[in-house]
Image 1 (cartoon, rainbow, N blue to C red):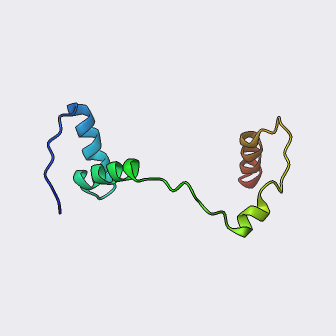
Image 2: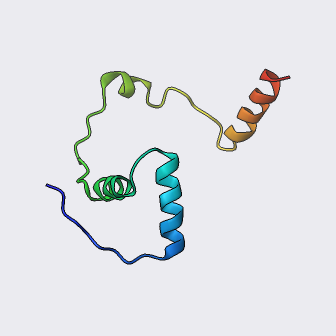
Length: 81
């Protein structure tokens, strides 16, 4: 059952939120409802790790000073050369 809620927010925040909702083709009410739902849902403490993921954990050893951003940038430079 939907219930009406009145909020007082900064008009700039409301304006930006309306623009965001419109650009994502959802209503402002749905946007706020989704946000509140996501932050209030209970997180499961007992998340099961699949055997495949468990078997892959720790398979790659990287040096402490490994710079993944630089490595990825180098990859992109080479790819789009």
